[in-house]
Length: 514
Image (cartoon, rainbow, N blue to C red; front, top):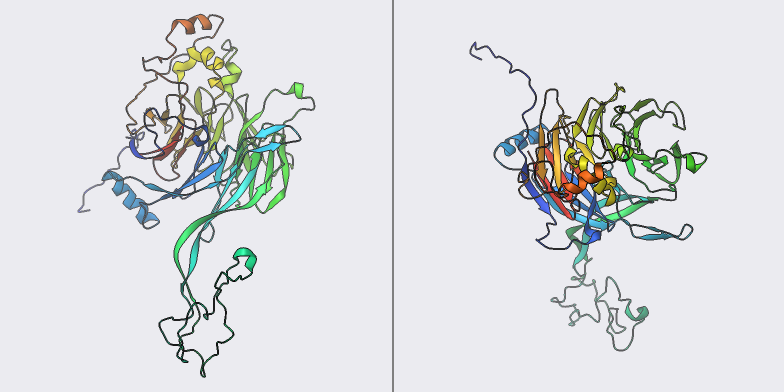
């Protein structure tokens, strides 16, 4: 370069991202009441990031498709970087929806089974068709979504404008029908004219020049969702997780006490690989809360528990993986124990990073990042809503303390995100030296409600907590911002290769880019 020396810039922590609103689907007007069945309960991007699926409490799965990408590969990514700098952003459009689950009733246990979609997982795309798994509390279904061409008869076999050769013209009474009507049981009656060869009709010598085969053409395509397989009757308790294996052939499903391994092709049997059910249920101390396969090692999976621990298991060690290969848990500080300690320690969601080196976990108050090569404790802890600590008594009384928030990592592994109350979600930088901690609101103006939450030492929760809570205004956080326990952002997903987040606020799907 003309003899000039190129000096590499010092590699520091990434600059905090500037988030912007991209799209909203299903936005409700002010004062509009949201139907329970329309509330979104699951969000998932596929591996390419070109498709997004949401599930709701009414058992529906809605698919969205990326529209702003023309080509693929490096050129596409380069053009996207340029597009972002010009203010353009990723755009999705509604693709299709289908009813995945219906409400059921278990007569043996006198139990109602909700249609609510708990989890959605994308499978490998094949022959242009999309495949995905969806589950409610008891039943997993394997769906294929494919474009089908709608075929219609464009030209009939007799041209009525031409003469038949014997002076008569073709009419409906002497044309050969491609498909006779089957109305009224399929029997002709005197009041209805049918297309058949009348008895006084005779073919002219040399045949009919205007008679030809009907022409079938396909004008339009329609998306058809077909349920290929149903995986049922394998769980006594509510399914909280499903996860695809990197081998493309198997997946796991987890409930409170067991994890089952399935083959996608076989729906009538599964293998129980983890069983934490004690001989006497009175001895039960913890339950499984989430489970996920390693993104590249088909023999490795992790599951979390209500005691705040994560167990890594290796399927090569034993057929029944009751003994773990590694255990990740944080030792609690002495003297910090309270009535709420175990409740808020329960992990609601775990996610592997793209390379499989790190596991992100979400408990009620914090996000924790774990290195699978270091089981002494998390490598980083992020306070999500520390200002709610004095409100734990109120949160317990209105059951909010049992809310299950999800978490997600960016494709490059540099950032993590999770939701909170008042439809807020938080993005943290997890690169070395990063202090990024951004609070955004699920609205068209995401930066409207910045809630700086400095990490403060947690106070001991003793008998005086009730008096402390009653004195303070229950609707105001540590910074004077009001918060609302009825609006909560539980579900969100990060695009696998870009800084783009989809999150659910009640029945609305909001999308942001940076």
